[in-house]
Length: 94
Image (tube, rainbow, N blue to C red; front, side):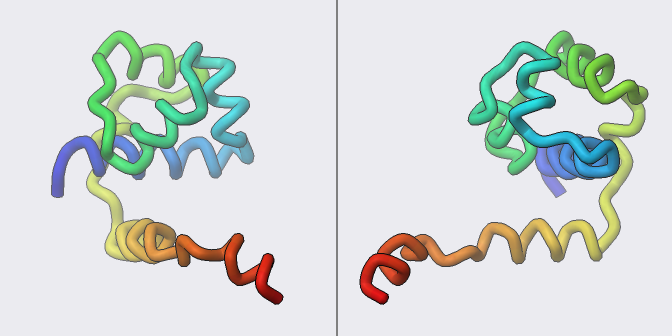
């Protein structure tokens, strides 16, 4: 598994465990919600300095970001990506 995906899944896991929204974490760490979303999905490659900001905002430890995710967490992530893109169209046409 790509290390960016591992880090992203762990950041998402820690954020959700603290019942924190992406918006709240982005404000606490000094980035946009879009950038944070990109990190959580493994599409962005954050610097070590930015990861340190996330550690502080999540009141966590850097090592938590590098724990291999369980199969269940990986499956949930895969399923989350398969949301239908045309939800708005279906609602509008109903």
